[in-house]
Amino acid sequence: MTDTHTPYPPELMRDVAKRRTFAIISHPDAGKTTLTEKLLLFGGAIQLAGTVKARKSARHATSDWMEVEKQRGISVTSSVMQFDYQGHTINLLDTPGHEDFSEDTYRVLTAVDAAVMVIDAAKGVEAQTIKLLDVCRLRDTPIITFVNKLDREVREPFDLLAEIEDVLKIQCAPVTWPLGMGKAFRGVYHLQEDRVLRFTAGEEKRSEAEVIKGIANAQLDALFPMEIGQLREDVELIQGASNPFMLGEFLAGKQTPVFFGSGINNFGVQEILQALIDWAPPPQARDAGSRMVQPAEEKFSGFVFKIQANMDPKHRDRIAFFRICSGRYSSGMKVRHVRAGREMKLANALTFMANERVLKDDGVAGDIIGIHNHGQLQIGDTLTEGEALGFKGIPYFSPELFRAARLRDPLKSKQLQKGLQELGEEGAIQVFELEGGNMLLGAVGVLQFEVVAQRLKDEYKVDAIFESADIHTARWLTFPDELTRRNFEREQAHRMGKDVDGNPVYLASSRYNLEVTMEKWPKVGFHATREHG
Ligand code: GDP
Image 1 (spheres, rainbow, N blue to C red):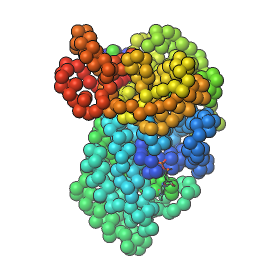
Image 2 (image 1 turned 60 degrees about the horizontal axis):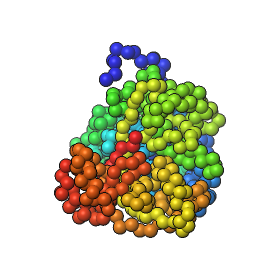
Image 3 (image 1 turned 90 degrees about the vertical axis):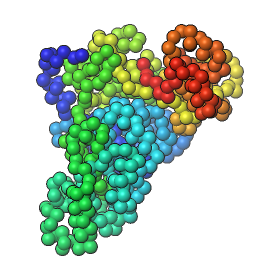
Image 4 (image 1 turned 120 degrees about the vertical axis):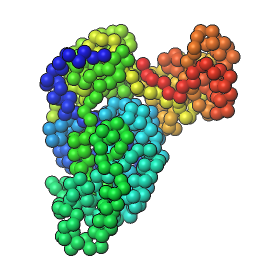
């Protein structure tokens, strides 16, 4: 355990306390891109509405991978957006925007300290909201909820809260409450501050929404004769029946403060920023295997949570996205690559600023740096200033879709193997080697196969076909002893494979097949997730 007598450097403690690192999670179309843009706008990081939107459409306008390739420079820089707000440094980590739920998203969520969940008020809790929240729950990540699109005809707010509580199993503490909705959306009432913030439609940034103090204020009756009665009834009900916001419960991931608004109209966005600053946690201690690492420890450490191929396919340069967990990054510093047992120099790492005019060359816990490398760094790798730490918690998930890779030109099998190995290490797809050397691909979203096929063609000059494979799910195996392992492997050879790191995996043909095998081998561990590293 950490020596609590060691005082941490005061400047480091101060800088760490100012960090807020978070991601936005939502089902596609709920308004994540819009909210991202408005947060940057209010944070002063961009001047013009439409900037992030243009990036998004640039990324999604075409399914042609070469086009996507050209856009990669953009997607690298927009993967992490850092900006300053009210004396704090905020890191907003983008999660992949495509409908296909990707493993990248899981991994990005291991690098944040909080998340903002956007719910479309007309649709409520949707499929990906559920999956993403499950991932947040693995680390009890605190969640701030933004119920969006109140300018539309939407569902009853009580209904929405009940659904969030029932489906997502998280307690809701409303902080603001809508006054009317759709065409009659008039604003929100701030339950803690006892004031109504008036809504006006429009995309321009306003310094302050108009405020009316006190729910009993006669001005409200005059302004909103049709809606105010309902609000007063609702508020009475909330005060009687719903949970008050409790910081401790929020930080434990058990309760979520709920805000209502309309992202596109800039309404409710400032409250989200305020909640991030006031309530979301600064970087916390992290489990590094042998001990907990405190964020303000003097020595530098952190881990790679995402790898992205860079602009130039010829050089196969990759960017490793690295979350700093302690100490301070400075350009040119020497660090230890724990898995490889080597020293490496961190020169020219990318630091991320949403406002490109500001250049920065340092980082502390909570910040992300992008490290150029040629494949030395893998997802889950830990870098330190000497100590053999290993940060925990970056999972591989059992894929939901499987395809067998087959070559059009059998002479290219070396290239195929190399390509798949590298793409597997990069985390673009999961790769399993079967008995006899055949390669099996596993993905969470079907787009991953298309991307891999295209990249094999462009970067490795391999024309591969992916055929459907008769596999239902994969389980990572652990054995109580050598003998059991050997017996199991002999009996189940035809259902076994190895992942890119050489770990044994059971490839079940059906749920039934898995159950039968598990029953027959009670001492063998069958795991649906595996940690990197
Ligand atoms: P994402 O897929 O979650 O990133 O969602 P987007 O931010 O792209 O938003 C999806 C659609 O909803 C777009 O057409 C937005 O203009 C629209 N939208 C976002 N916020 C609001 C809102 O507050 N009100 C209304 N009416 N539409 C919104």
